Length: 414
Image (cartoon, rainbow, N blue to C red; front, side, top):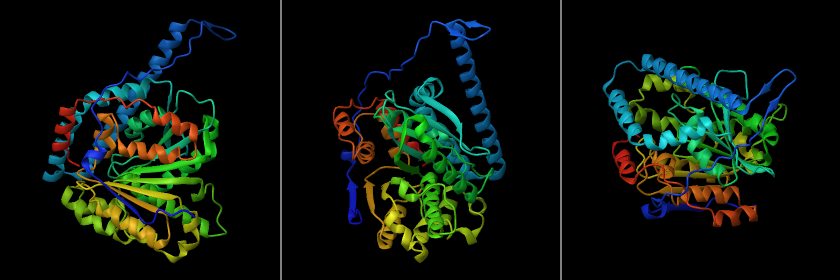
């Protein structure tokens, strides 16, 4: 069995910065129909477009209302505090600097026919996911399930729209999971939602043109923590022979953990100093006694999981060395724990990269991005035709001018 246990990469700044170039705008294919005929009506094309436009506007309004309502609820929990207010102000300035890119991606998200929004995977609030489809869906495509971050409080499926857009251009279907956030739910709800979402996608993705035998999982920040917890909980279920399971960890071909925290005992004081106060964090994690239960670095060492380790997917942990939200040592220690347990793990440290560089600034910069190409190479590793297409793929579009990206990095609260 192939092993990644001795692989550790530290990438210098020059190797992971993309070039600031601009490519042609993303093309969108629309099917034109002269008429839509039913038994009682004949609908002209322009009326159909108006109806579609109204639905899209309604969806924008509903999503805006949801985010606003959750933000107000969050403010009630946080109260008045100097640290989180300064962080909030920095976040506002950060978002404004990146707004040119956000607006372009938002237009794609709300109006592209290749994005299927708010598909249902369960009966709980926020049990929804967005699906990003490649232009050519003639044959089954590999699938990446993405679990977004957001400090367990502001996670939202649309945060993965840039990733979905760019991977779909490479022929990869992306499913961005939503899940209950605090105070709508606590950590066990988030993990259960994520596991249920993974199960639904594995068992139904063939209906959308995906290949259920080529499913990959990625989590970013809090999403990396939640998704790794979901993997380990599923592994524990599989060791219990009497428990029915709707999906298996062996069906996940590889796991990508991006800027995640995997030992909550090491992070609770750090988060308190950063403005995620201890009392709030412990409420999210269901009390101090649950910190070990939801710490993947600790849980992977459980002897009860030994029989499940051979079925564990290859793990790629990626972290920036200038990440102040979650220090890169979190990924280093989790990688060591995985190796000691016998799992296949590779650690990639990116010199000088912050918590959001890898997920936002670098993709918005466009051009060549080592981490993006690395993920695509892993997903296409057994598809020679796809690898050939990747070699000649155009460089990614630049969404935000370089000067704004550099300013955003300097004032980023992350």
